[in-house]
Image 1 (cartoon, rainbow, N blue to C red):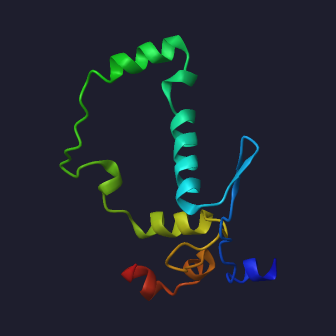
Image 2 (cartoon, rainbow, N blue to C red):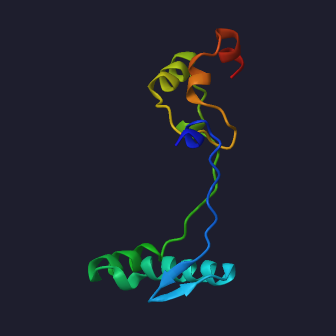
Length: 115
């Protein structure tokens, strides 16, 4: 537990899966088994008839991924919005950047301006 709290926890290596009473140990077989399971779970076979109909109708329309970057999430934000968001954050596990929320919460104003 102390290792996890201090950030020294390393992910455990997956050695095997138990599938239908059999043990899967080869890495490529594990990957394929997980892929097949995800594919099966997300297939339309598990959906209601009304959802299948809705899905089939919705898939007739193409999706446009073009953008002029005027979406609200692309708008500049104020210093108040930044400090408010950081103050409401909870101490969770750090990301790939290894920056803790406590570090952000205690930044001096000069560094917050840069951020």
